[in-house]
Image (cartoon, rainbow, N blue to C red):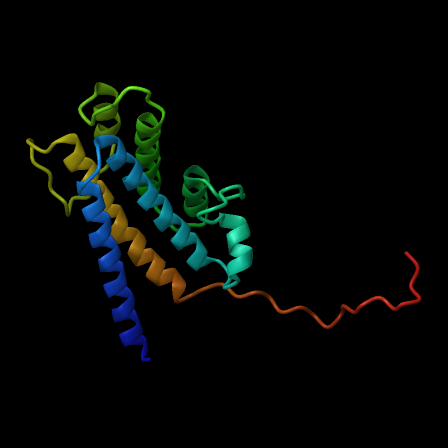
Length: 188
């Protein structure tokens, strides 16, 4: 399969994922929306870092964690945000927006009573998000509109970076010929 055909197929799969994600959002409560948006961003960060690292899935899974095991050095949303920034994969504005999305998610996740995007503490966090000039907002946009706009912008940026880093993936250094197995008679 030619590279262009492979990329076209991958993009179609991403669009299907995006469509199903948007469909799932429409069926969620405000808490569910906050949790799903953050989970989607977390997933994209994992993909970005994984595509930047060496092509050794088992070692990358140990570092980044998997869907069933987050007990790893970079298994949390917070650690992935920091790692992506420190590796130069995201900008400081993207880092700050992701951290705000994480805070919003945590407010919803840890609230015993139902929260709303209109709650003052949530509105305050959303107002701190930086919105790209390419996505103009009007004075009548709701907090969820602003959050959704930032998420769409971040998604596009992260997808672009994933594509870019996957084309320049790291390789494992070759072992030198200076190593050998110890002889049977070797005493330890």
